[in-house]
Image (cartoon, rainbow, N blue to C red; front, side, top):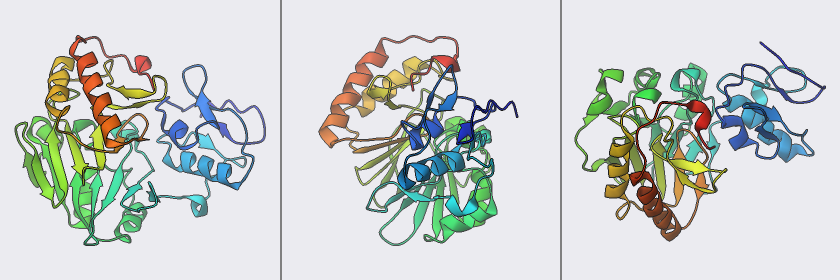
Length: 297
């Protein structure tokens, strides 16, 4: 395990890959120390203890450990509502087979749901999501997050979506997005092909409120702004810049919900201004070697 335990409280073991997931769920309690996550201080109340349990059940390597070392299934909060509307739930249980990506359940007014990317495969987790309503579609943002898509889609009896640019990662997909023009998934939900991070990257936007951005862009706590993972671009940063330029004046949302990096809620106009600025900044970037350690979380 490579444990580095120094006390008798919560701790992070040596399997940590510095994916940032635990820090998103327990800010101020878990932080980055020496290129990996570490417990900065012990919880002071039940609310803080709950945030650590969320971090532990989301961590893809199960590196966040409670005092007795055993995760308590009764303290698993997922699927967990994003806000008080209950429209989006965080799936948690991030999978090492999807590079530890976040995934989301999007609930629709008719009682059905769509899953954007997936948590680790587990039939118990699938049943929890089904309990919130029938899941009609599993939407893959790109190839890196495709590992469990077919299993979840088959379990739900749902359609599996991917873009043709990444079709080899899910060749048995039920629906294939093509080109760069937006496509309707269902009422109020659009797919916006967004090549750059990979050839077949896609954004999914719901109700002009929620933007599921995959790995195309994210909120950085370091810069307090929208960022692209310029050091982890598998296809072409110049193509990503072109995608941002196309979207900057027509993409409207309030919640940014990425696969990697932090979430953020801002007014429409603020998000639009930041997206335009990101498009301008990204236009000046050039391809560089992949370096996971250079990502500005």
